[in-house]
Structures are given as structure tokens and as C-alpha cells.
Length: 143
Ligand code: ZN
Image (cartoon, rainbow, N blue to C red):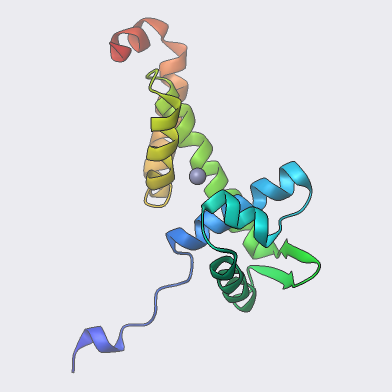
């Protein structure tokens, strides 16, 4: 018997789900609500695909979706959204130390945020604090 065939499905906190949660929380924080049309625009995906994903996330208990009233994150959806937002912020703060192009930073962070482990994230956060305290070292690193 192959181990592969009996392997359980991975949890739905995939990179795509994390991107949705990140965008939804951002929309709720800035506009007060998140609509399918706004998410579609922000992620550059069709509204039909967004609706599909939102319905799956509703079924997974990450949010509550009502076609004409929009959506609200559940407690677990919000916890995941805050976690991905935190990863995004820590990685962005770190890369900004090096004076890199903002667009490049955003692009890289959008990839890295899905893969970074908690211990690595903590190390990066600590390193960011330390580098900020040592401008001379930071200046050398930036060259
Ligand atoms: Zn992000």
C-alpha cells in the first residue's frame, strides 16, 4: 500500500487562501467592508473565481459570506489573516533596511510570507531590531 494514496489532504491554509485573507482584512481595515468586486480587482482575478474561493472559505469556517451583504471573517479567519499580515509587515520592515526598491520588496514579500517558518520570522524580527540599533553596521550592509 502506498503511503501517498492514504495521505490526508493538506489544510486549506494554502498560499492562495492566505492571499485572500490578507486582502480581505486589508479591505475591511481601510474601507470597513470587503466585496467580491474589490477582492477581484486587488488580486487581478475574475469575480467568478473569487466567488468560488469565498464560498470554499465560508465552508471551511474562515468567513461568513452572504451574496448581497458581503463577508465577515470568523474568529479563526481573522486570526489567520492577522498572522499573514504580521508576516508581511516583519518581512517588509526587514527588506526596507537594505534600501531596496519598494516594488521589489512587495513582490518578494508576497512570495516569502507564505513560506517563512515562525522561528525564522522571529530571527528576522530580532535582526531588524538589532540592525536599527547599529547604524554603522547597517550602512556597511547596505553597500
Ligand atoms: Zn502580503
